[in-house]
Image 1 (cartoon, rainbow, N blue to C red):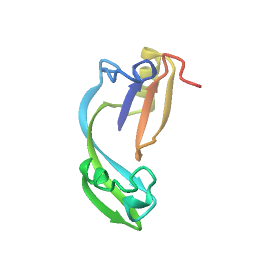
Image 2 (tube, one colour; image 1 turned 90 degrees about the horizontal axis):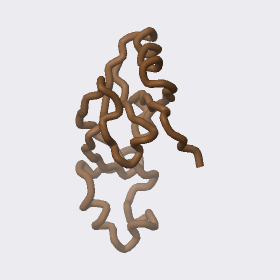
Image 3 (spheres, one colour; image 1 turned 180 degrees about the vertical axis):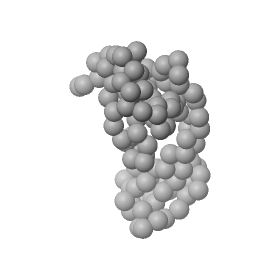
Length: 116
């Protein structure tokens, strides 16, 4: 199974989070619950900015969407035993759905404090 992987301590730097990680391009879809960027206070009177960023601008189910291609780090973990070995190697981990794409699972190597 493929997991997006990151380190808490690398939040801003986005460096390679672990030796097993490989960088891949990931398509992230930015979605907003309205049918026109002019309905977003950030873009009112400046709708052209919405279209200058990203690609594949569209409306689906009444929501405006656009795609971005970003480099992300991924690891392959094929069993629960492999996941436990990964945690033994790197310490505490947080396993969750990736907030930007709930179809992807994310492993965060929890090596720094992040709560506010």
